[in-house]
Image (tube, rainbow, N blue to C red; front, top):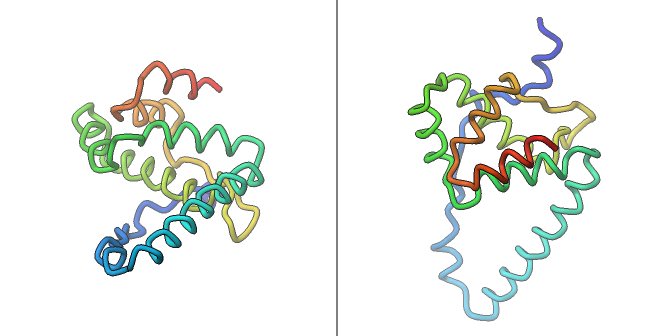
Length: 144
């Protein structure tokens, strides 16, 4: 077995959308404010975790957040497909993005295993350029 494969994000793990709108709407004003503040605190704490994960994690996460800002994963996948990227390459790139963001960096949260894309650098860059994000900024972040 390829030892590098242990570092790839698995593309065959199912994705689930967390629906919380109905539950949130059932809260009173005070509970909504509390939930909002807890979410903000979690977001700020997550950023600190990213910085502690590895030296390169903040730039990787910044690149991924930029690439998906204002663009849904579905839109990026569709654009990547239209631009000729193979379905397996798109799935592998999406899995890498999801796992890095879920682990707050490019190391698995439950150990010291580094996470690397299962696609080559050129393919991953092409994938990131399929978003609606500012292409110039994407290129600058990619070079870092």
